[in-house]
Length: 307
Picture 1 (cartoon, rainbow, N blue to C red):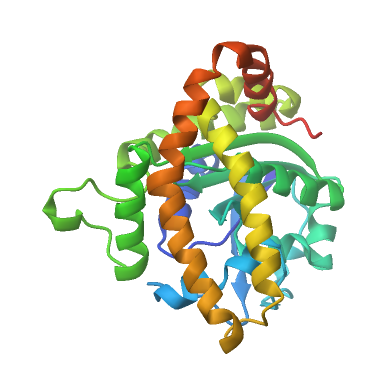
Picture 2: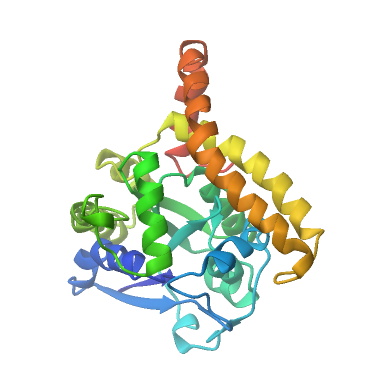
């Protein structure tokens, strides 16, 4: 019998739905037992979000500052597993605060030690640099990354940012104004994610997880958008400056930093609506001279290698 643990944190329920679809074929097997563990912050984050709370967590989220968690004495964390699936969201180009907090906890590090791990990402569009941060946390825990699956919102950037914002602040997954598409990852993509479970099941039962990512990529588990890689890298540099600057103005809810959080929220919208199209034009103009680097990036970021 193979034991598989799914560790996740989900607010809207979308990520849990993805995880259940991916593990559906595993759960049906008489040779595999699948368990789920939801990370529980002591002071959980609200859903739907309030605008000031959503933007207010930015510095701590980006700087990967852990928070206190509960339910760490759960017996499910004491068992031995043959495979761990880490399902996570991306907050501010970084693994969500609950995920980061869990991976930095000693109990979690003991759980992950010497274990093969699959990362399962549900994101709007940019996840590359967040995955690099997760890789480092897994190395710190002495875990072995054997696979990655990234499901994203495939609508164009300026459409998805509107629909996701309405979903986060209203808490309802519906067509904004009755015209925009449903927010988040398409239902079709979520349902079709069961195909990844079939591959995971076969490689796990045959003790052949070393070829898992190769098999997953054949089914498009990871699709690298070179423009998003470029945007993600540049945004990380700018976010780092903002996060460090705002952190110096005080702790969360400190009145001294509220005006800077508001300014950051305006900058974020400016970056999406104005700077991003400019970066895309530069990307197109430099595409041909950058082909070798782009192909190298695509090969690396679609793998489980760690730089």
